[in-house]
Amino acid sequence: MSADPTSLSTSQAAPWHVAALYHFVPFARFREFREPLQAFCEANGVVGSLLLAHEGINGTIAGPREGLDNVLAYLRAQPELEGLQHKESLASKKPFLRMKVKLKKEIVTMGVEDCDPLKVVGTYVDPKDWNALITDPDTILIDTRNDYETAIGIFKGAVDPNIKTFREFPAWVQENSGLHNKPKIAMYCTGGIRCEKATAYMKDQGFDEVYHLKGGILKYLEDVPEEESLWEGACFVFDERVSVEHGLREGGHRLCRACRYPLTAEDLVSPAYEAGVSCPHCIEVHTDEDRKRYRDREKQIALAKSRGQSHLG
Image 1: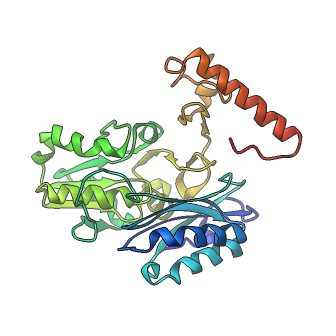
Image 2 (image 1 turned 135 degrees about the horizontal axis):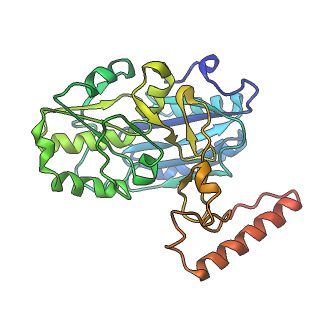
């Protein structure tokens, strides 16, 4: 479902319109669709990342208004994708370096066989009703995102599984028998897709009352007034904006190019921070050889920039 551009907080002069989308659907011809889709996006000046699999499509793309509209119309013209919905925001600069359409086993990887959101899924909760659910004492609220995402923002009172990847989520559920202590499970993620599989998994594990935030954090930040919000911090996004805040305005985080961790203003003045080379989160992880390689990469990026070229490495 697209946002009303007049409601977005970024300047209306921003040239980049961003669309986050996913759609679970049986998609037998996903392999043969990759090349035509890649070519159509490039012809319309659209950049970003789209994943195709037998179970549907997932990704985020950005471009000029006309180009983005053309690609969205092209997707919905496919019989399998006519019900595709998307969420929009704006970016003040190019949010992706290039366009990538990839073939995958899953459009969101949890690694559990036969976990099918088309067969069973949790109950969707609109953003306007979310606060009432998560403040109900009979509800356990769970963040299904990775640790680098939860580090910069989370719903008040949420349980953070502290997982590195979504593949770790099923094991975390198995290790936490206390999740059965309350009758209601509420779950959320960035745009909603991870909760499609997470709630399907929870239902398969015997949890009866399982709910998830419709449209994810992005829709909540768009729809719920900041003064009524129970969201604390910023929401990590998988593009060059790094994070967004209430009203989907761009956040103040930057990305460590060595470990992909979102960095705060405090991180940027740390002695451990060196642009493109290290940050407080990875200074003890990478070797001197790694850092030498990263410095060489930064030199190549600077050299390309001085020539007016784009370095994609």
